[in-house]
Amino acid sequence: MDGHQSPETIEVETQILDVVNKFLVREVEPHVMALEHADEYPADMVEGMKEFGLFGSIIPEEYGGVGLNVTTYAKIVERVTESWMSLSGIFNSHLIMANAVMRFGTEEQKRTWLPKFATGDVRGGLALTEPNCGTDLQAIRTSAKRDGNEYVINGTKTWISNGIHGSCFALLVKTDTEIEPRHKGMSLFIAPKGEGFTASRKLEKLGYKGIDSAELVFEDYRLSADHLIGGTEGMGLKHAMGGLELGRINVAARGVGVAKRALDLAVAYAQQRETFGQPIAQHQSIQIKLADMATKLESSRHLTRAAAEALDAGERCDMEAGMAKLMATETALFNATESMRIHGAYGYSKEFEIERLYRDAPLLCIGEGTNELQRIIIARQLVARNPI
Ligand SMILES: Cc1cc2nc3c(=O)[nH]c(=O)nc-3n(C[C@H](O)[C@H](O)[C@H](O)COP(=O)(O)OP(=O)(O)OC[C@H]3O[C@@H](n4cnc5c(N)ncnc54)[C@H](O)[C@@H]3O)c2cc1C
Image 1: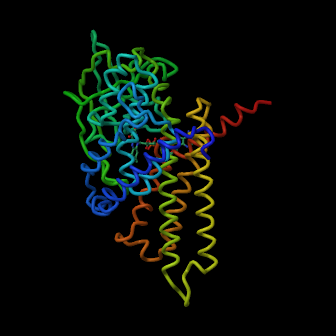
Image 2: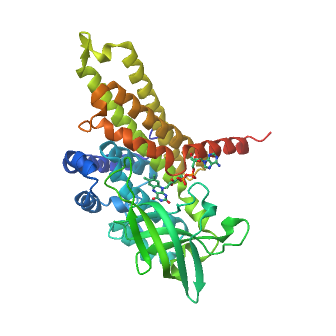
């Protein structure tokens, strides 16, 4: 399981996971139900996460971060998600923004932005999706027109996580709306909130409560040219997609977290609830559900760890990350549904935790590339890696 990790790395990882676990048990779990049902932003928890460096967890130490590898990071995401998926969303998309700067930013951009991102004082996420497109990102309409040493940006983004409470976003725009192929006209900017940049409304959702999803509007919003990531126009889609392996492993880890929690709840409930004189865990149809849930969970965890270790080792892992994302998120949905059924009527009650997992799980199949898209990516890679 930890094949690529040195004993020192494993020791550091154990210590960090222990700190995270204590924080979740003491500061998070007692409050999740209330915050979830009030759809309230967990401001105190965010302060706690800032204190132990979660917002800088994968940012290198030389830029003020903790410098964790992706394998350890994925385990943190898994554990946080077991307690509350919304909490993981607050630092996950923030770190995807940071990752774009880490991988593709100029040295000056790294020195300017990464230390601020690492403390969590400047927080945000990734602004790609627009009202007319999500999967087909080359169809975006938000434009940035050069004006001297500045760009003037106009357009609308939607479904942006952390859109209201965040202050800075990696913003995908068209710097050339005519050019073919379309991706050559796309650029990614570091976009701090300012004049002309407003979070126009909070979107109401089925689940994933507490974290804000917002529509962002840009009206003659001006950015100096040094905010263009990497300094060269036309690289935006590559820069946005470059972080997607991390993004997919991150969503896979969330899937593992939701799937594990759903299974744990089901195993406990099945031993407490009795029908016809025995715990329902003794009935074969319930046993089949538990066995399927546990087996899918284990395979999801192995795929996610393998993809994370491949990314840490610098190996190509687009197909592996896609498989992990597909399997783990479908398992999250499967386990949440099966666990709810095992809970009977109580599974449908807002007083039981499983109801939240059931509402959270479907998002994982949509975000960071829908599972329909993952299957396309996996199949294309299979063919590309096995030419005849
Ligand atoms: C709670 C939440 C948070 C989000 N956070 C963010 C965020 O922080 N930043 C951000 O930029 N976006 C965010 N999103 C948006 C998310 O990334 C998109 O919803 C997702 O990429 C899908 O895009 P879409 O909704 O436009 O669906 P569409 O692209 O319109 O797809 C509709 C359906 O068609 C299918 N489909 C599309 N193309 C193909 C194809 N070629 N072949 C087969 N099937 C296809 C899709 O799989 C889907 O089933 C968030 C969404 C939600 C719900």
